Image 1: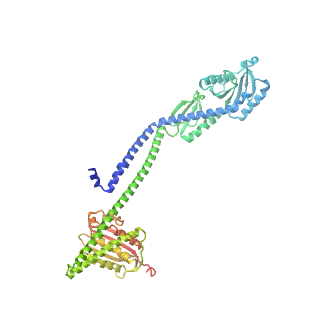
Image 2: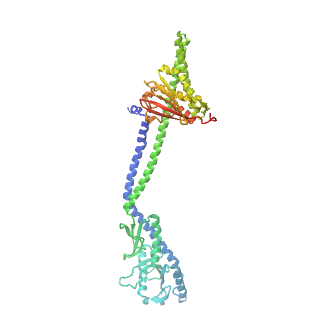
Length: 550
């Protein structure tokens, strides 16, 4: 049943069904799945975006840690090699600290607290600024100095719970409520010696507030924001909600607020978007992905369409060639059968009437000419396909060529009952033509007019000059050509898809050869037709311009 149904389908219908089932249906399913995937991705974009923000914060923290480690290694670690407890080395220590401060503008203050292990000086601390060397006893420490000692002890205690391998301590002091004299700011401490004990020996620096904001934070955050999302805003504040760094205000509030990891536990980061919101980002991401998918789909469908078109064309050409072989076989077999039949009758002497003999001889001659014409068409087509067809152009009179063609078709015209009306302008100017080729072209057009004339057997041939061209019109009152197929009738092997046409056998090469011949003469051919009313072919050939052309 299925085979019977598909057998009745045309080749193009089969290709369309194959493309729909085998290609377009899977593509449609994949496209729908991709759309669903993009929709799910849009819904998950918010969570993914926040995860990316957290990862970005981790990168910022790691780079700030590394930067502080570099400062500690360059400025504080060398203090370990100085003999702080020796009075003779006091000037050397002071020169070193002064040199560090002058070569590092990011440092506001540098200091050392030294707990001596010498029992004679067990209670002695040396508190040293780079700009003024001061050695004081424990009991003489100022509140600001005791605050620094407190921050060191606090940082050392926190370190023992978090990372005992860290070589430096970090503290951001927001001061004590009610004690406005305390110096607020960001400190780095470096324990001296192998022991890590509370109120032990350590060196430290107080960083410049502008350096912390513009360099330590801004110098790391700005490049990351510019390379990943220029619309992103980041604000870092301390435990008193004081802003340490900010690159702008968000449009619709913060998307993420999170405390930083140690050693920046007292800082909080808030991240938002300047000129957009996360819903717009999700929608833009969806549209970009959908656009890319659509573009790929368009290219894919275009390639499939071109493939189907090429396949359909090749299949139709193969079918046309098959029909051509069948039609040519019929075209050759029919005249051969008639020639064989009438020659056998004449050879056996079965016809005594001279008129009948003349009629039979005429039939044999006509069928021979018809056979010869079919063979000439096939040979000429073969030469054209191989690009070996040549034409010998010479000045000629188309009226003479047309008269010769009519004389060769006289028997067919009379026997078929046709009325041929000619309107040939007198004294036609010469044209450059290959006489045999033009005779073949006119003969093919006349042959078509006779084949497809139907009941009204009238054919008109008009020859006249139109400006600088010679105009030849061959018109019939036959079955006509549908308007949609008039541009295709000059294609090789093409025959109009009409049952009345296919009732008449033909090779499908006649009009293709005519067009090639006319164009080889630098002319043009056109067709006008109405179904059921007839067809008119118009040939325009350029006149010979001067005696040299002639």
